[in-house]
Image 1 (cartoon, helix red, strand yellow):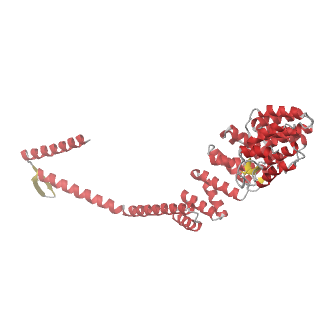
Image 2: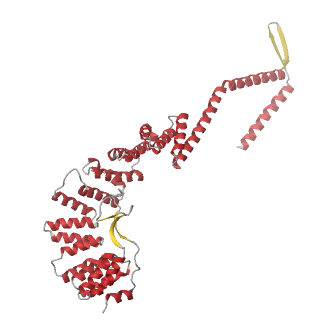
Image 3: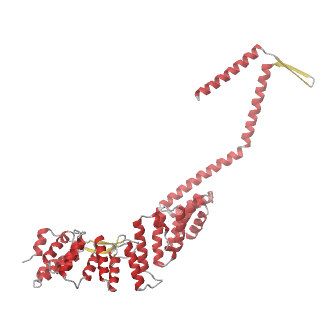
Length: 451
């Protein structure tokens, strides 16, 4: 490009030089006669006059255009200043929202509406501020206006969802969430809200057709979709207030639940009880054993022992050994083997199986089991169980159903916590308190075999 610029300058200079040389060699004369007047001048002077006149005319035209454009320039200047002020106001307003200062955010929202009432950012700021200040009427109307603009439709619907959730209007929230899902089907927030809202909707009416077809499952992992479907069926089974289910319908729901989450001990136990009630003891035992192999649990262990009460205790112990062989070192397996050995009066095996439990943050039930072993083996020597009975009173550890969010302890598993309202957060966990230190091997052996 520099070469082209240099070449152009050279050609211009050459052209001027040639014209100048030509005028010097051939100066010539120019004559004009007009209204009886005759004027003669050199050609070079005429060209100079022409250039001067054209330059003056061009300058006058430029000045005219500049003066003519002064109103537009002034208008553009103030418009830019207004836009800059609007942007500053919006930024300050969003900052006030982030800082949770509703009064300040409200003042900036009013300024933004005054500067540009129909601007998308002004609508967004107004909607967020009115929601923050709990002016739900203004928030609803603002979110409705936002949904009419394609660029703001998602934000407007999201705000409407938050309002519906605030009012606990799960049906309206579900309708808005379905529209959001059509806009952004892969949004994690939309999927999570659809998942939670469908569960809340099921608590109100588990037969609601809105929760029968859940297309968002295809955007979830298979495991998450299965667990969510299991929660919906459990709510339908246990919290259905619209239709009373008979025993056959309840058993069918339990079978569907067991097919979805066979590792859940409460579901497996209830299905086993239902089968046993209808004289299907083998089916009940098979369900319990399968679930225990997948996820050992105290509830399943107790149900397995209860189903085999009329059998030979030695045979029961051998069967329990086969069942626990899939998880031999699990705490629940040790507990089940100890209980089975105690029932079979195999004191050595019972003490062998309970030793790992006594070494690993023992619970009240473990100390109680050890007390039973001492009393059963030495019925005439009650003082041997006093040590374990005192440990049971002192300890605070125990396996319980508790909510992972609020810590509420419940008697059994449920799909949601009645205290904090969270879904799928009730787990089987060891609730700890101020416990004595676990016993070492020497102390344990000393107190377990008092002469």
